[in-house]
Length: 104
Image (cartoon, rainbow, N blue to C red; front, side):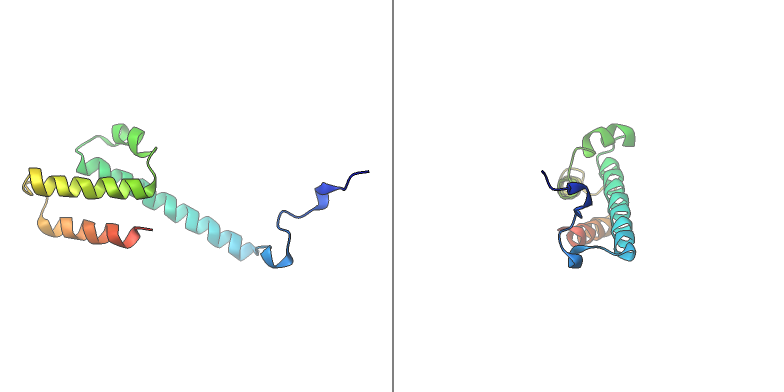
C-alpha cells in the first residue's frame, strides 16, 4: 500500500548527514550564543539602571540584534543626557566597538 516512511532518513542525501563532531560543534556554538545573549541582557540591564530580574522580562523577548540596538541607544542616552557622569568615554567606545563586532 503505502511507503514505509519510518526508515526514511531526515536528511535526503549521504552528503548532508552530520558527523558526531559536527553535532558537537553545533551544540557548543549554540551554548556560546546563549551565553552571549544572556550577557547582552545583563549589560542592557546595567545600562538602564534596572534590576536584572525586571530587565529580563523585557530582554528575553528581544532578538540579539534588537538587544544590541537597545544597548547602543542606552550608550547614546548616557552620552547625551547624563554627560558621562556614570561611565567614562573609553568605556562607551569599547562597548560600541564590541557591539559592532558581534552584529550579524
